[in-house]
Image (tube, rainbow, N blue to C red; front, side, top):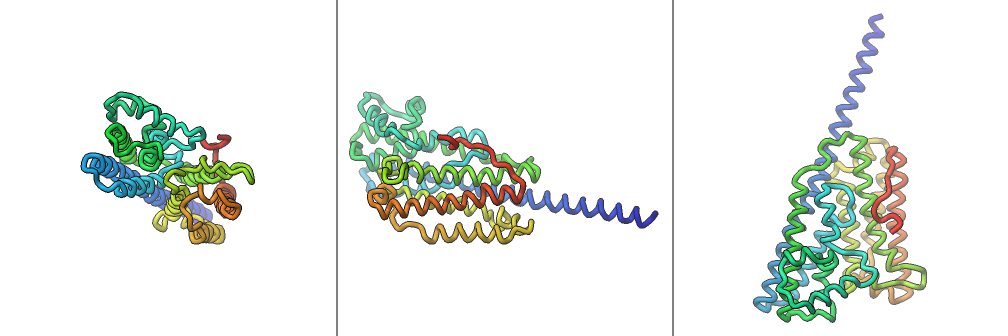
Length: 336
């Protein structure tokens, strides 16, 4: 009988060791992904505060407008790491529309901003908070900086811009504060894998919408549906989206890439990693999706880029989910 007891004890010990190892791996992934998200929120808050300061300096001291434009671009760059995500602190996710209103199908931002400029009000952040989200975020600042209808640096436009950028800084500070607590600290491995893959899949879905909307029907593009068409930076922001997703996927060497390899799926991990790299390496030279969609070749290049993202979605949404027995649910962009 003793050999049976020894065998049973060895089996229990092995199971315990495997469970401890899985928990350790899961905790390490959670901590690294959380650290990336927290740092992204911090960069966004710092960048938007600088945007508010530089906007005010531009208006008060008549400083170089290009400095404000560059700071707006840096703030957009920071936002791309969090844009489209549907996993994380609820307090942070609830502010997504306030940070950026998109898609703007009917030029609501342009119409609302023109209306605000015509109102005889002394604008401040409190008044802006009472307005539509279309006039609260980065798109509204873009309109002030790049739209031909903007009256910058006239006093009324400066006052409105100062109010918007200050309110934006307040909202991004709230996002940073929300990320001070790890929302996944109590997740077990199964819960975490579902959350992690959904985090990537949802952000990828959102990024693909940034191409599919302006591509519209073949031969009938809608370039004004492109994100940031006024500043001609649509493709630049999308590249930052993909770079941010790759960072989350790798997670400093302990992310999903590493986990797939440990589970015996190195070939799948290689395909995902290689596809990230090849997609970024072959990125279109132009930063303007609006301009690209004006030509047949530009449309074809954009469609090719969309297909690359669609394959990446297949790898994560289908192959990874199947191999790890994960079910990815619907998200806010489905059917939109």
